[in-house]
Length: 63
Image 1 (cartoon, one colour):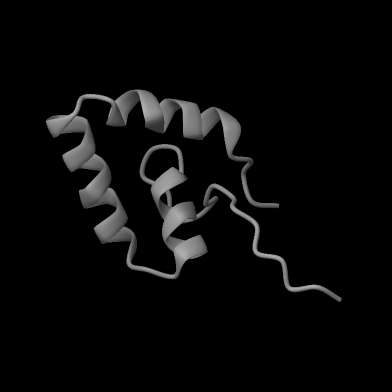
Image 2: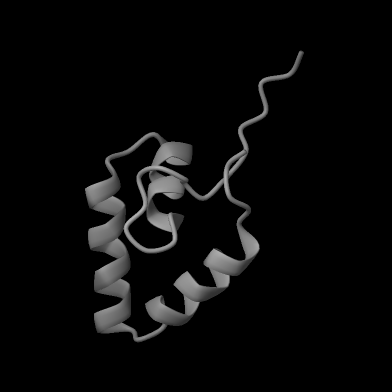
């Protein structure tokens, strides 16, 4: 058996699409930190919103 980590959108800890919660679970960090960083990217660079939508489409929901 291999212990391969897979990135999934969260089904239960989501606020919008579950992307931030899925990333937090994958990297084993606090979901609030991921959400804060994503908001900063959206405000400062403007590309955070587009990146979130793309991640929402690409990353599968956890089984």
